[in-house]
Image 1 (cartoon, rainbow, N blue to C red):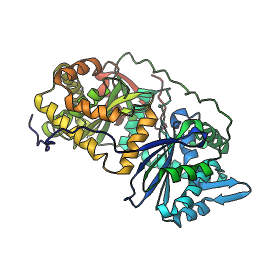
Image 2: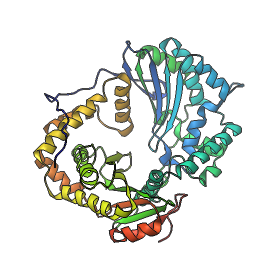
Image 3: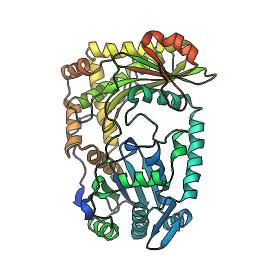
Image 4: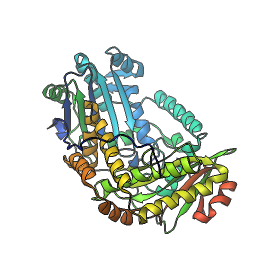
Amino acid sequence: MTHSIPPRISELPSFSLPSYCTIELTHRIPLITVEHHEQQLATVSVVSHYGAAYDTVWGETNCMVHLLNKGTRHNGITYNAQDIAERIDSTGGSISLSCSFDSISIQLSILPEFLSTGLDVLCEILQYPSFPADELERLRQQMLVEIEQANNDPAYLASIAFTQGIFHNEPYGHPVIGTLTTLQLLNQDTCTTAYQRSIHPSCMFAVAAGNVCTERLKDELNARLCFADAPIASPILPQTQQSAKPSPTVVLIEKAHAVQTALRIGFRTIHRSHPDYIALKFLNTILGGSFISRLNYKLREEKGYTYGVHSIIDARKYASVLTIQTHVSNDVVDCAVHDILSEIERLRVEPVTDEELETTRHYMIGTFLLRTETPSQVASLLSTLHLYGLSDTYYTEYIDELASITKERLFEVQQRHLLTDTIVIAASGNIELLESKLRNFGTIRIVDTHGTLLPS
C-alpha cells in the first residue's frame, strides 16, 4: 500500500486543557468558563442533558427548542418572534438553538459590552417561552418541506434505513426532526411536555468562553434565573433495550431512478468511557477515519468504486456505533460491500503495520490539538466531558494513550471489538436491484420513506 504520508509532529507533546473555572450557579446549575479577554466575543451556552432520545412524539424536543425564541410571556409582558429578534439584533449578537439525541443547547454570542442585554434575552426565552400557535404551524411547515427535500437525498435515505437497522424500537430509532407523520401530531401541549422535561435546573449546565468574567457572569445569571425550586422526576427513556440481531441484516429503502447506491454499514460497539475506546478510535482511523485509510485506498484508489469512503464512531450517551459511509455505482454495490467487510475482517485478524501505527498516532494527536486552539473549542471539549460524565483528566489521558499505544495493545482490541456478527448494511436505491445484489450478505428488511421498518 502506497500513500502520500502527511507530515509528522517532530516531538509528541504532553497535553493538559487550558485554564478554566467551574463554579455553581443558583439552583445548583454548574457554570464552566474559559476566560480569554483578548477575544472580541463572549459566548454563553445553556445545555440540557435531555434531548430527542426522550421524545414521546418523534420531533417534539427539536420543535420545542426551535420555538424558544419565537415568543415569550412573563408578568403580563409578551414578546413575539420579531420583538425577540430585534432585541438581539440591535446588539450585533446572535442566539443559536440546537437539538441532538443527547442534548439541547441555547447559545448566545455577543460583544461583552452588550452581555447584559443578551443575557436578558437568553434567560427570558429559556424560562418563559409561550410556544405561539402560529409560530408552531410555521415551523411545522418548514420542517415538512425540509423532510420532503431530504427524502430526495440518497444519503439521508440510507441513514434512515441504517437507523432502523441499528436502533429499531429504541430511543435513537427516529430522526431528531421527526417524520412527515409525527410532525402532524405536534402541538402546544407536546412542546410544553418536552419543555418541562428538558428545561429544568436538575438537568442543565452552562458553558461560557471568550471575553467573559466568571464572577460577573455568575452574578448576572443568578439575577435572572428564577426557576421554580420544585424537583421533577428524571424522565425515563421510552425504551433502552437493544433489539436482538442474531445475524447480519440488510436494510433497504427505495430511491427511484438512482444511478448510485448510498451505503451505510456498521455495528454497535463500546461507549467512550470503556477502557478500549481510545484504542478503537485509533483502529477506526486506520480503517476509514482519514483520507489515507485502508477503506479509502481499497475502494477509491485501487478499485475506483467511489470518490470517497469514511468511517466514524458515533459515540452517544446510551449507545455507540461504528459506521462506514460511501456512495458507489449500482453495478458494483455487492463488490463494494464485500470489500468493506473484507477490510474489517482483515483488520480484526492482522496486526497493523509500523507505518500505520506511527502515521495514525501523529495524525490523531495533530488533529486533536487543532481542536484546542480557541476558547470556544476548549469550552466545547469541556461541555463534552460534562455531558458524558467523563473525568477532568480524560483528554490528558487521551493524548498520553495515543502517544504510547503499541501494536500489541491494538491487536487485543482488534480481536475483541471488530466483530461483525450483528452488522447492518443499509442502502438506498432501486430495491429490486439491491435485493438481487445484497441478499447473500444478510436478512433483507425494507424501510419505507416514512422511516417505518416493514414486517419481514
